[in-house]
Image (cartoon, rainbow, N blue to C red; front, side, top):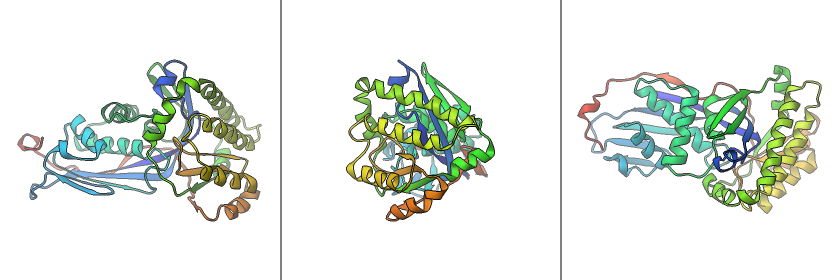
Length: 337
């Protein structure tokens, strides 16, 4: 049995510039962090006592005799990709799916990590990120960028640069006390809405040629935000005000990024004392992140008392195996196809 633990991510700046259609022509960069809410994937070989040969447990339970009959596209394609057979797979998570935290990509990274481990193979964090990008964007043909898979795999507070179908990951160099202050000034609220990121991404991608100016401006904010974090002489509150700027730019990328409902929640937070914030993920619903100085946090919490707050801490480990107990499996005797 193998169990992996893979963190969710929150993207601060540069979202949208991580889409190949944009960064291969221009360049891209994202400033993001992983945090201590996780996707757990449990994988083992299924004993040969049942009429079915593979069982997949997530929001529903699938039991099949052929891999091609698995409805979950991620699981089906990942099993074919790595020639996995006769498995019992269980998905669990600390936060709901389709809420702007990169859940799908987090699951992809954790699933592949578990599969490789079950096969007795080691894959680096970059290899896992690359494989997850290939699985989602090519095999599953889902629209979207590359930042989620990278953040889930590497973990930490990073700047990710994109160009020429490749990327580099650079940790943001920030004093521990300043990093904690940043963490303490960020409040996360669940709006109650869920949506499929790929649907929003399709809408966004279709208008990229018309939105390059906004994306270029969002890209410039990555440099500015990194400078604020790394220069201890600068006021950290500037980071919050910059979040407000990037959110306003992001809203112009596609007509499905925000809604009147989301805009109303955002304005309540701002009026109560938040310096800035943004909706996480592609848009349309999910989690709203606010930057709020400590002396205004009680006011913001009161203004947004109708919405669930999710306390969190940054994490820096990325995907990892937390339980490893492989068993013998005779793949040659398998009849599953």
